[in-house]
Image 1 (cartoon, rainbow, N blue to C red):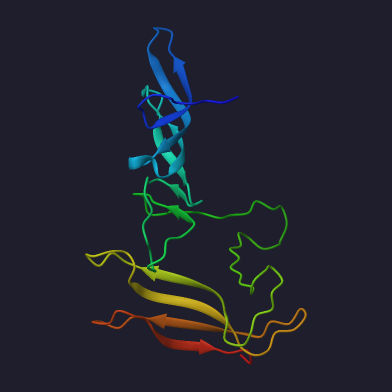
Image 2: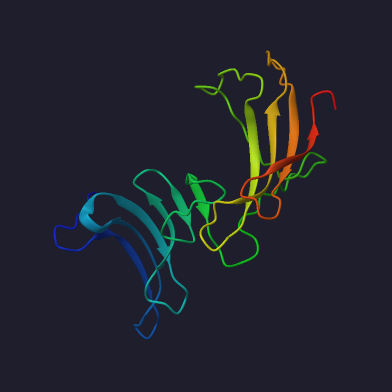
Length: 189
């Protein structure tokens, strides 16, 4: 199956529309490809509308470089001058939730951050960052400036099933534009 737009429009795709008993269109969904201005890149768009809408509003976008954006149509740099591969924007208080419904005493929702050199089994070195959680806020210019950071670093020489590490807590002082280490728990505790 090939869906192609040979006209002057900037998108082609599959559109799903439900009609009510009165014959009016209600509740729509779509999956379509959209070209950006100038046709230099494309994005795969997923949309859906409410029960009273005849058009499906954009809900998720996968850009031509592989970035997945949920709740917005363009990428925003948060906590860094580099964009994230997965971005979620919402006007609600919670942007994401990870939880488990395992019927056992095991762990609840787990967020795993990892780092390896060159491949999934590439051995790290002393002082390499295992992962970090950054907290950034809008400062009138952008969302790149970090207010606080929690990170884990390698604290020694890794070996087979051996990953010595430290946990570092950083905050940003008033009139500063970068975080400063405030607390460190090293591999010896």
